[in-house]
Length: 135
Image (cartoon, rainbow, N blue to C red):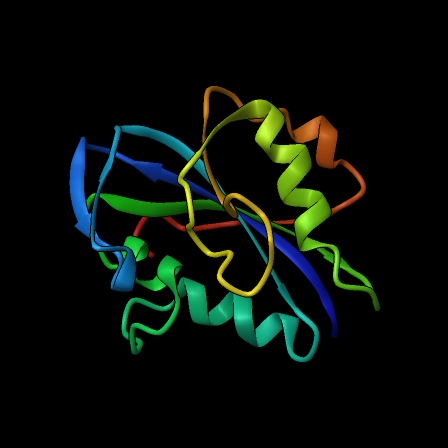
């Protein structure tokens, strides 16, 4: 399956987290939305993000490795076209971008956003996966 996904992430405590080559960044307590895509193996990519044990490869891996950071919900949509940049632009309307995060292969400002609220009705046409508390 090919497509795009949004990870809805809770950061439970103000934290400084080292994010690969971006260095140490400050993340406020709150809700974040990360946009990604997988043009081969969407299920595998989402499952990788949900696993606790993995190699740190992408910026999001460093963020998710922090003990205060937990994925709360996953939204995904099948698509034969790469749509993550358009989705990131739409989500940027909901909050503040973490500059340079997750967008080293495109011209976007970011693919991670601290958001005040996330309206699930906006993404009603997407499939959702609820994440268990222990993940």
